[in-house]
Length: 294
Ligand code: SAH
Image 1: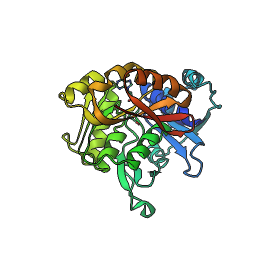
Image 2: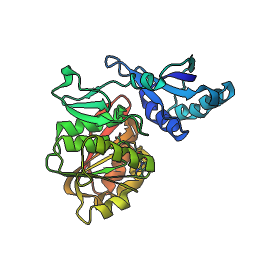
Image 3: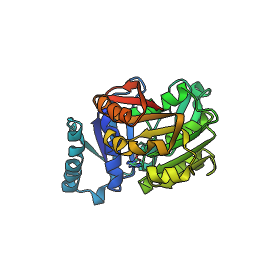
Image 4: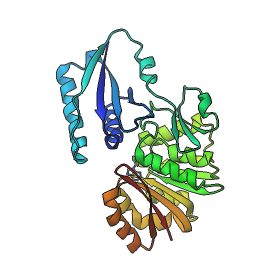
């Protein structure tokens, strides 16, 4: 017996909610959305019924509520469905769909075939069961679209805060020579390793190490990258920014996302004071993408 939680979520909450559920050991999750209405999404989570009596389920919801408050949003009422002897694993997987991004990319849950209508796209195979979902968050899409628009052909790329590794996998699909990625979360390191394997990438092509910008600088061995990808929240980017020059070479390009549009002016100021030329490159909903050069 399983409980299935259905919770309508605003796109900006998706990543934090998935993150929290994973943190709580709940890995059977999915985001349901139709390509026509990308802003209307439902978070689904499957919980073993015997471990989740009503008081526990209410408590779970109370744990999730503050995440919405951070964004000045409120959560909708959750719907709990009791599922009898359903094969939860199949029902869980069937909610993940191939997800076209930009003109040329396709995020594909690993167990699916490429649909004919997307046969021309570059496939990024992802295992949504690993901690970091598939990369349908607006900030991830912003980075993917920017990568596609200016493909990183032949470049050495640094991915700071790699999560699922989706940006690195995409960079390599778009012609990058090498991707060095780091993340402070060991689950992300595992997810990126798994997703690199799924895409047949060797450790020489896509490496991932536990750590942050200092570790990245060491991995680059004194030769800063041509392209820096960093999709983390604005305050974290700000805190890391004094060290960007150790990981991004002069003349190289940095793509920074994870910031809300209203956070861009302050972050721009900080980056400019560090000698970077900053340009707002794109926006999606409330999220923004900045490009930095030096
Ligand atoms: N790059 C992925 C994941 C973005 S989520 C994507 O675009 O989809 C942000 C990631 O940054 C998380 O995996 C988080 O663990 C990691 N992170 C947070 N603070 C960090 C820091 N100080 N240094 C490195 N990684 C960090």
